[in-house]
Length: 192
Image (cartoon, rainbow, N blue to C red; front, top):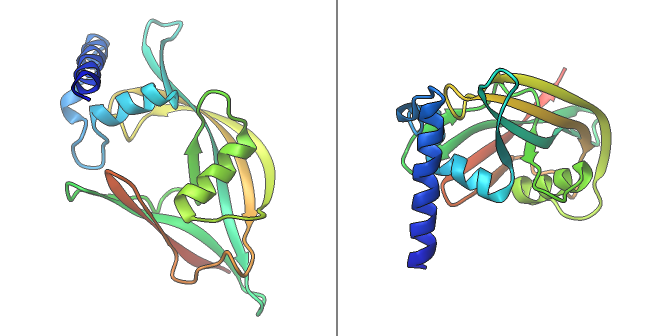
């Protein structure tokens, strides 16, 4: 266990040096809504994020994943869309997320395909099991500064889905995903 911690600390220090050499101020990580340097290292270790040097010599984080708009149609004919409201980190910081257009997103790890990633995301984030009405819509590519890691340019490749939940999968009060470092809250909004 001690050896694993020591190895992680070494990788973390190496990552910090790599980012700072690229002109990225890592002191902004873990502040406000930003994730910590350890979060980024864990993403890299899991294969969810990859750091590359682009053709201009700039450091670039690449992330591939699946995102879904999650809907529920009530027996009365009302349509609801799920949205991620916020994340509350264990250290007390709050990250408002109600601006996100999609309901659920999940990063891909090596060897996964978009459909299995989305099913895993729905299970992990919302606790939804069983048959899922999952419709793949398109693949989007986006290049932008990461709000999670200030100053780090990120390229996102997102496989977009629509999901319609059954009566048994629908929870009127919404959903919570409790993780080691944070809790994420999801709520329903009626689509007019």
